[in-house]
Image (cartoon, rainbow, N blue to C red; front, side, top):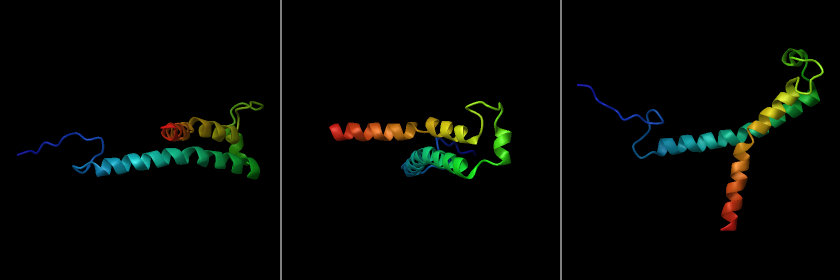
Length: 96
Protein backbone atom coordinates (compact mmCIF):
# COMPACT_ATOMS: atom_id res chain seq x y z
CA UNK A 1 0.00 0.00 0.00
CA UNK A 2 2.70 2.49 0.87
CA UNK A 3 5.57 3.22 -1.45
CA UNK A 4 9.03 3.57 0.05
CA UNK A 5 11.37 6.21 -1.29
CA UNK A 6 15.11 6.33 -0.76
CA UNK A 7 16.33 9.28 1.23
CA UNK A 8 18.13 11.74 -1.04
CA UNK A 9 20.29 14.78 -0.39
CA UNK A 10 18.01 16.77 -2.67
CA UNK A 11 14.26 16.23 -2.33
CA UNK A 12 12.71 15.28 -5.63
CA UNK A 13 16.04 14.61 -7.33
CA UNK A 14 15.90 12.78 -10.63
CA UNK A 15 17.26 9.27 -10.91
CA UNK A 16 20.25 10.33 -13.02
CA UNK A 17 21.41 12.94 -10.49
CA UNK A 18 21.21 15.93 -12.82
CA UNK A 19 19.18 17.88 -10.26
CA UNK A 20 21.77 17.21 -7.59
CA UNK A 21 24.57 18.27 -9.93
CA UNK A 22 22.68 21.47 -10.76
CA UNK A 23 22.19 22.20 -7.05
CA UNK A 24 25.92 21.73 -6.38
CA UNK A 25 26.79 24.01 -9.29
CA UNK A 26 24.40 26.69 -8.01
CA UNK A 27 25.77 26.38 -4.46
CA UNK A 28 29.33 26.81 -5.76
CA UNK A 29 28.37 30.02 -7.60
CA UNK A 30 26.51 31.37 -4.57
CA UNK A 31 29.60 30.73 -2.47
CA UNK A 32 31.71 32.68 -4.95
CA UNK A 33 29.22 35.55 -4.97
CA UNK A 34 29.22 36.08 -1.18
CA UNK A 35 32.71 37.56 -0.67
CA UNK A 36 32.56 40.23 -3.41
CA UNK A 37 29.01 41.14 -2.40
CA UNK A 38 30.06 41.83 1.18
CA UNK A 39 33.14 43.74 -0.02
CA UNK A 40 30.94 45.96 -2.19
CA UNK A 41 28.54 46.49 0.72
CA UNK A 42 31.49 47.54 2.91
CA UNK A 43 32.69 49.97 0.26
CA UNK A 44 29.24 51.48 -0.26
CA UNK A 45 28.67 51.80 3.48
CA UNK A 46 32.04 53.49 3.93
CA UNK A 47 31.46 55.91 1.05
CA UNK A 48 27.79 56.67 1.58
CA UNK A 49 27.83 56.40 5.37
CA UNK A 50 25.95 54.01 7.57
CA UNK A 51 23.49 56.51 8.97
CA UNK A 52 21.51 55.87 12.13
CA UNK A 53 21.52 52.10 11.60
CA UNK A 54 25.30 52.08 11.93
CA UNK A 55 24.99 53.36 15.47
CA UNK A 56 22.64 50.48 16.34
CA UNK A 57 25.14 47.91 15.11
CA UNK A 58 28.15 49.24 16.97
CA UNK A 59 28.01 47.68 20.41
CA UNK A 60 31.04 49.44 21.85
CA UNK A 61 31.89 52.98 20.82
CA UNK A 62 35.52 53.41 19.93
CA UNK A 63 35.98 49.73 19.10
CA UNK A 64 37.72 48.88 15.83
CA UNK A 65 35.15 46.17 15.19
CA UNK A 66 32.12 48.38 15.80
CA UNK A 67 29.93 49.43 12.90
CA UNK A 68 28.83 48.02 9.60
CA UNK A 69 32.00 48.48 7.53
CA UNK A 70 34.18 46.20 9.69
CA UNK A 71 31.34 43.69 9.91
CA UNK A 72 31.03 43.53 6.11
CA UNK A 73 34.81 43.23 5.74
CA UNK A 74 34.89 40.36 8.24
CA UNK A 75 32.02 38.63 6.46
CA UNK A 76 33.85 39.03 3.16
CA UNK A 77 37.00 37.52 4.67
CA UNK A 78 35.11 34.58 6.17
CA UNK A 79 33.40 33.86 2.84
CA UNK A 80 36.63 34.06 0.82
CA UNK A 81 37.32 30.33 1.23
CA UNK A 82 35.40 29.55 -1.98
CA UNK A 83 37.73 31.88 -3.90
CA UNK A 84 40.81 30.36 -2.26
CA UNK A 85 39.65 26.85 -3.24
CA UNK A 86 39.02 27.98 -6.82
CA UNK A 87 42.47 29.56 -7.10
CA UNK A 88 44.13 26.52 -5.54
CA UNK A 89 42.33 24.10 -7.88
CA UNK A 90 43.25 26.15 -10.94
CA UNK A 91 46.91 26.30 -9.92
CA UNK A 92 46.96 22.54 -9.39
CA UNK A 93 45.35 21.98 -12.78
CA UNK A 94 47.85 24.26 -14.52
CA UNK A 95 50.82 22.40 -12.97
CA UNK A 96 49.68 19.10 -14.47
